[in-house]
Length: 209
Image (cartoon, rainbow, N blue to C red; front, side, top):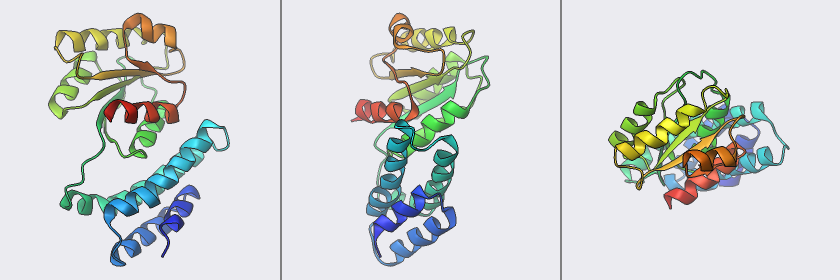
C-alpha cells in the first residue's frame, strides 16, 4: 500500500478510511514514524499550505484534523514504545477574560500537524497558569491567543510572569489573534507574532529545532 493514500484521504477528511489505512500500514510492517510523517503529517502539511493560500477554510481544516487524530490514536502507543519523542512541546491557551477558542484550536491542530506536542489549557487562562504549565511540563513555547482588545494586555502579564519565574531565556512566547499585531508583540517583549495558524506552526517548529 502507498502511504500517500493516507495523506490523500486525510486531506479529503475521511476519518474512518484514514483509521483503517493506518491500521493496515501498521500490519504491513511500515514503521510508525514513517506512517506518521509520510501519511498523516504530509496530509496535514498540504492542508496547512492550502489554508494559508485561502484554498481551504476552517471547516476543511477541522475535518482533516479529526481524520489526523484518528490515525494518531493508533500510532501513539506504538511511537511511545519506540521511544519516539515529539519535536517540541508547546502550551497554548486563550488569555484570561477571553473565551474565544476557534483560532487557538486551529493553531493547536497545525502545530500537532507538524509533530509538536501541544498542551491545551483552554480559554480564560491566567498568566500564572501559562508559566506554571511551561515549567512543570518543560515546554519550549508558550502560545497565547486573544480576540478582544480588552484582554490583549494579559499577554504582557504572561511575558512579565515568565521573567519573574526566571524562565524567560528558556521559553519562547508566541502571541496571536485578531487584535494582535507585530507592533504589540514588540511592545510587550514577546518573541513572535504570526498572522495565521499555519505560520504559527512553522515558527514553533523553528523555535524547537
